[in-house]
Image (cartoon, rainbow, N blue to C red):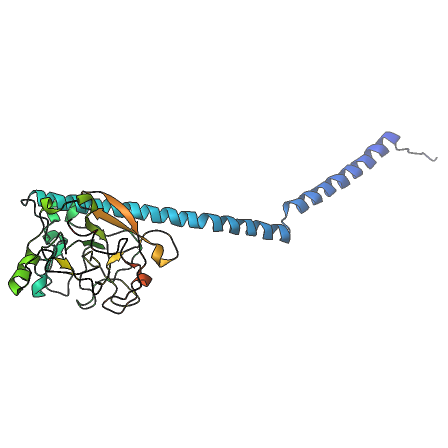
Length: 308
């Protein structure tokens, strides 16, 4: 006896619908996996956008770092100004000597420290300003300057001042005054200093500045004097030749060397940045000064340094 078994139409429909649904989900899955992957063009576009953003952000970050270093440098200079004023207040108004033994070429006494031999750094804790500075020392300028460390005196003769220089010619000595002619008067002029009341315009008289010296074309050494453009003899600037510039325009994230900035600390205690002026000369070591960001700000004469 033959028995026929029939599948209900509803079951056939359900089976066909299930097959269709499986195929549809498989297709959707394939489309999802296709959409989740990056094409080569999309990847190149993302990389290009990221490179563009980095190109925009990096100069801004560099400028922010440069500004931060300049602010820290100003803080260091302010401490030096306060220390110098404090020293003068407690020493009958006379400022700290810049280099009391420089006439004898001894090179052992500086405003920032003392040493026993020429081939060692100055010890700031033995310097005349030690009692007026936090930690007893001039802090090192945070500007990106790779100062030569150690080595013999001929290579690095002012190590220990932290990258700051003092106005020796007009404040840290008396070589500016008339009557300095003989050996003894020169010696006395370096050992003695200017009095606070002798500065006619403290807000326009440089006391400290960012400084350095280049005795080759590759590196800097610390230099503890901010030299004016002209040396002084018998009370008058000698304008026939320029001094080796030591004001260092190390701040400012600008490409051209002549556009750098230097922080200047004035005798009244305020600080402001000054831009380097055009100057094409070489220093005593045959180094092109502007190429090393060494020079002066306007005006290139002794006016910002002198006592008038």
